[in-house]
Image (cartoon, rainbow, N blue to C red; front, side, top):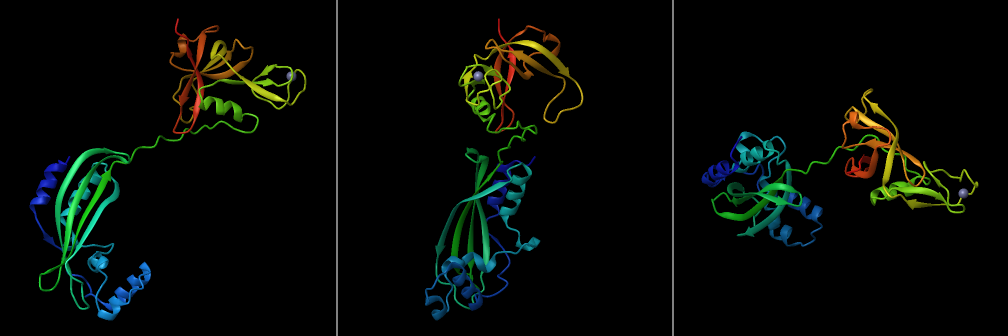
Amino acid sequence: MTDLHELAAKQVALGETYGLPAADPVNEPMIRHWLDAMGDRNPVYLDKGVAPPAMAQVWTMPGVGRGAKERSPVDEIMAALNDQGFTGVVATNCEQTYHRYARLGDVLTPATRFSGLAGPKRTALGEGYFATWNVTWYDQAGEPVAEMLFRVLKFRPKEKRRPYPLKPAVNQDTGFFWDGVRQGELRIQSCADCGELRHPPGPVCPSCRSANRTHVVASGEGTVYSYVVHHNPPVPGRETPFVVAVVELPEGVRIVGNIVDCPPEEVGIGMSLRATFRAMDDELILPMWAPREP
Ligand code: ZN
């Protein structure tokens, strides 16, 4: 693997490297387009035949199919950073210095000097390196017209967890349960009239037929009422074997869930469990069950 700081020192030592002269001299059509695009109505540029200084980069920016002669000492650094996974890029600094106006007919040539690599640094975007370089645009007489310091952060994009493929159906009947799970609560639906608990949630109390409902928060304790060890078929997002259990809660209802943190062969009927909440991806949390410590 390329030592980035070694490569950076080598590129710094190259000093100023000239690129190809601009394909076109400073000209009125490009100035007119630029002023139009920027909404700049200052008449001075077209009246005096000078380019807006902020156009400095415009004259020599290489196209998509840049050739070997248009490569600068920066390209090798960028390639090495990409190779090592620092594929993200964000510009952090752009400081321009103008020595004089570029005039119609000037032919500008860029010269690039790689000036430094700092890092690795931890940033909000991810770990990365700050790369800084300077470009000077020279006219046909070799005099500088404008300069630019440019700095980018090349960062390793944070990996997003792959979304867990099996999403629970969340609707108006079950929303309260999943709201609870996100808060680390195991909620059991209860009848708002007679108080009977029921799980899974349903629209009507099986005891008194009332449609008024609320919920209680379960203690999070339970025991294995029944279980299976699932070996096949494969389940997306899960490693087999895993245990699916019917867990009996002391509150009086049963709930289906996985038993984790326990080899399947150690699971048994009547085993004491406690609820645990597991993040399956960046969004989904599932309630599961683990053996209760003695
Ligand atoms: Zn009821």
